[in-house]
Length: 171
Ligand SMILES: Nc1ncnc2c1ncn2[C@@H]1O[C@H](COP(=O)(O)OP(=O)(O)OP(=O)(O)O)[C@@H](O)[C@H]1O
Ligand SMILES: [Mg+2]
Image (tube, rainbow, N blue to C red; front, top):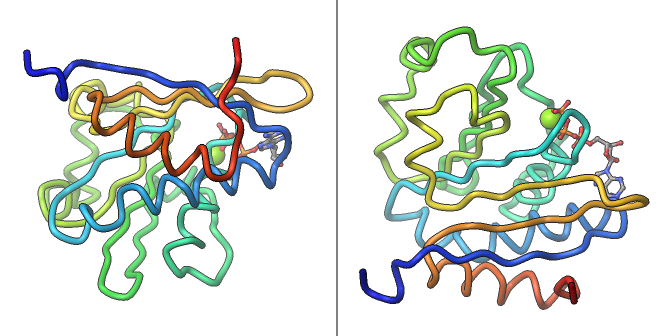
């Protein structure tokens, strides 16, 4: 396997809610250009209350969204058009069956240029397997620990942006 495709990971500490929002903004900067011309799928893992929607809010605001960012817990998907960049924010916690994604119109946007951001991706294993970037949030009282996993070049690109706003976890 070429070195740039080998899986890699990196970890960052997020001291408070604002740090989680800054991390979302850093991810936005790292993937925005690519998402304008290709489909980019970002999966956001973590237990209830881990900070997934907080990170999504930071990401959407960095892409120019000015309003609130509702948690799509019941609607399952919330679409955004941010200066021509299509973003779909999903929360699959209440997804009963992966097939339901088709009724949400997923086939229309999953392969088109744009960014898809998925909370509770484990509920849709087929989708999860296609993730370009996996972000995992865990409680690390009083803050959170963010782990990224992706192909090596992507981890480098996202880590470079995160390092501008966060200290990497020394452990
Ligand atoms: N780095 C952090 N340190 C401390 N608290 C944080 C941090 N990031 C987010 N939080 C807080 O965690 C709480 C839950 O956040 P959020 O709603 O984003 O979680 P979630 O993972 O989306 O939950 P759910 O699984 O229910 O959708 C919020 O009160 C938020 O302020
Ligand atoms: Mg949430």
